[in-house]
Amino acid sequence: MQITRCDDRERFYAVAGPAPLTPETVAYQRPDASWLLCDTTGNAVGRFSLWWTHAPAYSMHRLGLIGHLAAADASLLDPLLASASEQLAEQGCTLAVGPMDGSTWQRYRLLTERGTEPAFFLEPDNPDDWPARFEANGFAPLARYCSAVNDDLSRQDERGPEILSNVMNQGISIRCLDSNCFEEELRGIHELSLAAFAGNALYTPIDGNDFVAQYSSIRPAIRPELILIAEREGHVVGYGFALPDLAQAKRGQAIDTVIIKTLAVHPRWGHLGLGSLLGNGCHEAARRLGYRRAIHALMHDDNRSRRLSAHSGRVMRRYALYAKEL
Image 1 (cartoon, one colour):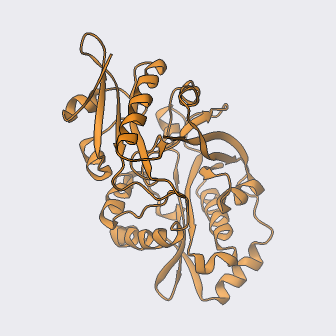
Image 2: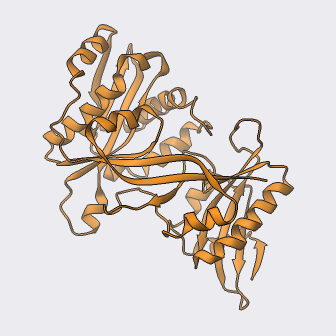
Image 3: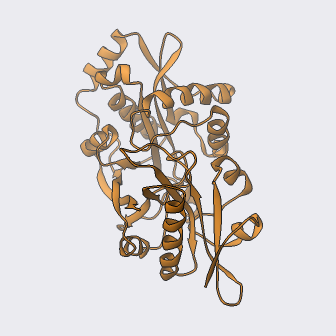
């Protein structure tokens, strides 16, 4: 086996991984460098990319990120992770974090407990034996996440009427996304996201154009009625972003589930319960449209959306982001 730095992007993309790579995706993920693992006959059997120049801040460490991971066999993660760790150490990094494709705005985390529910639309996936290979190579969970499913959309937070009254008294109104002003709506959501997530661990800001490009790519999947925007004096102060689970259609099933991808509230208004109101609003909008279930997707175990889901959902899947001191 031989690992070499790879500038041949077509060859790099051709390695089969948990998710396909495209030139457009890699262009705005901007890795510092990429490597290819080849067998004795020269066939590419693994790959990874590294980020160290613009990696997020974390504690007293200098972070390096490992992403774009792909391996023909789980055992090949051993040389890939060893090489990635060595390369990051040479760049002066003190903590390797992965898998993460450049930032938390992109694909990151490993699925660690699959459960019995099938995969949902846009959910990250990986072979079940990958977490064990990470741990065998000295990595340990840095953060844990879960997805939960609500099987009864008629259930509502009993505090809803009180929260709605408090929100309205602050001059905040809630409406659906206007698809006729799609890009403008995305830019308002982007601005609010920068404020809402700035305190999150491993946070890095995302350029507005990259944000618009990322969400425009899933525009065909969007139903405006499932995206709720909270506004005050013309400014977005919160939003709930849900969309149908198109993975069901790919399995030949009727789509009866929505995915609540993001709930975000400006820190100034976080005390009002606006996130809970938006989450309940997404449930109600889905119920009116004929959906039966909602998945609260990819929540950090400690965040507010996780507490909201605890009132109305059951955990269906678990994930972890891994780190290793160098």
